[in-house]
Length: 359
Ligand SMILES: C[S@@+](CC[C@H](N)C(=O)[O-])C[C@H]1O[C@@H](n2cnc3c(N)ncnc32)[C@H](O)[C@@H]1O
Image 1 (tube, rainbow, N blue to C red):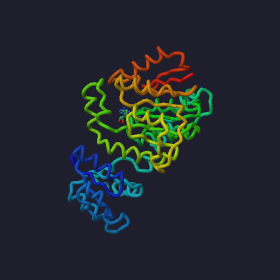
Image 2: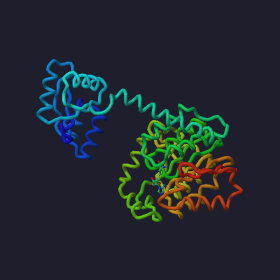
Image 3: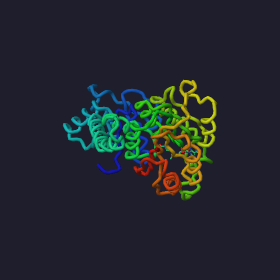
Image 4: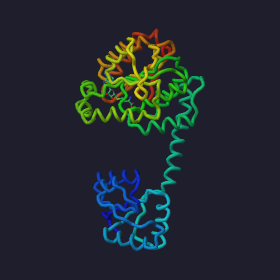
């Protein structure tokens, strides 16, 4: 069997099959789809959807082998555990020149879970360290937060998320604010932790607008990346990602940080996106994550506006303090540490972000 043989996806009926077909198309791999039931979505992605009877049908072997011969099939992906198991034995018993791709879906689940728990156990002592002796979330919750966060596109790494999980243990009661949410990876983490530690209401802010997203201090290649986004997809994607976590204590302002600050400081109602009811903000901040435009002037403005609202014992998380593409957050962070050291109780750098605890 040569390396150019087609791959049969059977049964092509679920999201695993769909994802395989999409990836195969991008790498130029020839695929053939088959199933015992109709699936319009797969047929549209994979071209023709051939019918095969179920694996229990007496005619299944004949029909499968005829499809294999007709299309020069050399590999089979079975995205259902029962069929994967059946096909492994079918190929071995008949000594067929067919390669069953990958592990059983059950084995994959077991391994993925074990890998996640290993990640969480590695990070958990750091979560505890950042909690500084205060009651903190468990290793199991650490794994849960990592898992959900990984499902949402974002730019924050495990180490930064672990530090966030820890510092919430010592945050006072007050508002939790995020400037720059993208698709919501860190917004989810903030929402979970605010609720878990009974900190307060969450305000996320992102204008999802090309003019604002472009970072003029960064190299041209980074500036042009902003244009790759469809900003309506970003907005819709964020809200879809927040559905399981957002409640009447969360609102999003699709505004720049400066315009959002005006709204936050006045008596204008800021309404929960899901219920439409006004969210009660304390107008005092317990945790702020500044992760908007990273140009020096933008970060400086974010800090000038919002940091006067910080409560004693509150946390500032300044993202990308260490950043390969520019030094806006680094310069602003250093200026703050130098000029306002009397306000700083504690500071550390983790996962590229600067964490500052206010006195
Ligand atoms: C680095 S991404 C945020 C990543 C997100 N916090 C995460 O970790 O998943 C930066 C975001 O800041 C937003 N942004 C740019 N300018 C902004 C501004 N003036 N105010 C608020 N958000 C802004 C962009 O639209 C973009 O979605």
